[in-house]
Length: 466
Ligand code: UDP
Figure: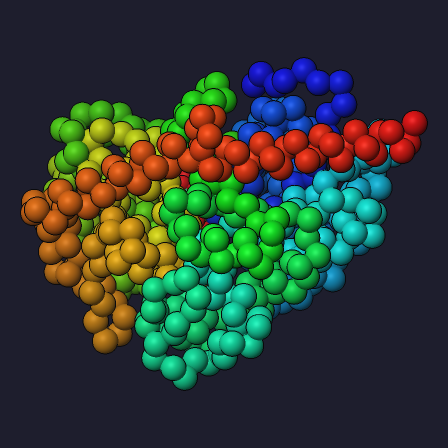
C-alpha cells in the first residue's frame, strides 16, 4: 500500500482478542492508520496468530500469551477457564512485548487495545503510553453492558421492559443472550463484556467500530460520558467502501480458507436471485436447528449459498446435498465479495456485529436468525430500528422451523416487503459511504483527529528524548 512519507511515524501496538469478529475490524482499522503514515504492530495470542493467513506485509505480527499455546479456547475447554488464565498471563507478556519492541528501536506510542482486554490500558499507563480502547460491538449493546456495570441493570433480569437513555424500549427477548441464560459460561462472558468498562474512564480514546449516522442518539449520549468517544467505522476493506486503499479487498486475517468456487457459482446466477446464509465464525448450531435451516433453504425454491464451517458439516441432514440444482454449501467464503455480488438478493444472518455492518455497507437486506450474545440486540435493531431485516419466528424450543424460514425467504424475495427492505438497505449503504468519505464524513473526520493526535504525541515524545 502507498503510505504517506513522513519523517517521524508514530507507532501503535494494536492488541486484538483472538476471534474473527475482533481481528477483522482491528486489522482494517490498522490499515487505515498505516495509510495515514502510522506504523502498526498487530498483536494477538500465540496460538491464534499462527492460524492467521495473509496478514499484509506492512503490518508486523507479534504475539502475547493466553496460556494455551496449543489450542487457545479449544485447549482451555471453557470460556471461564480461558478468560481466567488470559487475564493472568496476558498483562506480563504484553509488558515483555512492549519492552522487546523498545529494545529493537521501535518504541510504542499508543496501544489500541480490544475493549475486552481492559488490562492492556493498565499496562499502557505503566509505560506512560497513550491507551485507546477499541469496541467491536454495536453502541446500543455497549450501553446495555455499561448500565450493568453501573448497577442499573441487574442480572438475572426481572423486568420485562428495559428503558435506557437514547434507546428504544427493549423487551427481555431483545437483550443479549447473557440476560436469558445464566450458567457459568454465560456469567464468564457477561463478566468479559461488562469488564470493558472497568477502567474505560482512564482511556485516552474510546473508539467504536460503528458510524455516527447509524445511531446518533446513543453516540451523542456516549460522547457526553467519554468526551474522547469516537465512531471510526465501519472498518471493512476499502474496495467495498471508498476505495481509498488500493487493492484492499480482503481483511487479510482469516483463520479459515475461502472456497473460491462459490464466486464462479454466483457469476452464473441471475441478478438478485441468491439467498446467502451464514452464521459467522463461532456459533455452533444444534443438529435440529441445522436440519430446519437446511430444509428451509431448500424448500424456499430460491437459489442459496450457505456457509457451513467444517466443524459443523457433520450435522447436515444425510439426505441434504451440498451441491444441488438450487444450492451450494461451502465451508467458508469471502463474505464481503459474496455480499457485493449482484446475484445476491438477501442475507440470512446470525447478526454478528461485523456481518451487520457489512450487510448495511453493501445494501443487502437481511433475514435475521440471531443465536447468541449481542446478535439478539443487533437483530432487534436491524428489524425495528434500521428496518433492513425480517425476523424469523422461533418455536417454544427457540428453534427456527423450516417452514418459518421458507416463508420469510419467500416474503423477502417475492413480496413488496422485500423491495422496501432493499430500498432501506440501499439508503444505509449511501450513508455508510458518506461517513467514510474524505469530504467531511463523520468516521473519516474522527479517524483523522485520532491520527493527528498520534503525530502530535509522538513528536512531543521525540522532543523530550532529544
Ligand atoms: N466471514 C467470512 N466468511 C464466511 C463467514 C464469515 O469472511 O464464510 C467473516 C465476516 O465477513 C465477518 C466475520 O467473518 O467479518 C464474522 O464476524 P461477525 O461479527 O459477523 O460474527 P462472529 O464470527 O464474531 O460470530
